[in-house]
Length: 189
Image 1 (tube, rainbow, N blue to C red):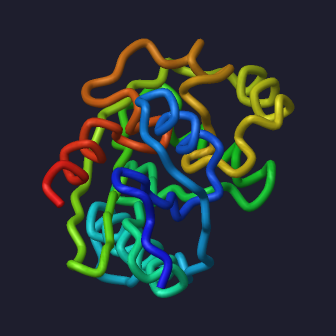
Image 2 (cartoon, rainbow, N blue to C red):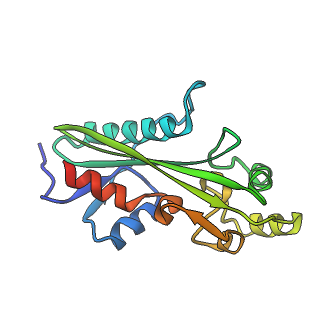
């Protein structure tokens, strides 16, 4: 059994944004992603959904690397009770951006740390306001290709920042990883 060095974790995610956030906060980590079914359960609330997926991702990687401390995470955008995952194509990205235009929505990120001692998890939620986007704004933004592979079809740290006048909560949560929550969970176990 390989034991991870003290303080080092494994990030169970392919997201370059999560890796950037962890590195910027000074965490030592390796990356080993696992594929899990991300289909929501019909009666599942958005916060429950992302926490369940974070736990499943962390457990899947822990099964591959016993003795490690594994960080799993999952982020989603919700509006009007609808979970907006990653757009399947440009038309879906346009649909999502029209839903967000001129309104507030909530970004939820579930975080889980799994080790041989068990799992600790939590969810962070941030409210994000979008300015009204014209059809031209939406077409321009989709053409940048930034909405690809992004929950809710946008990246707050990129071109979409010009449409977001304010947030209430953690900025890093909207990027994809609530760093303060991660730190708190890691300190507990």
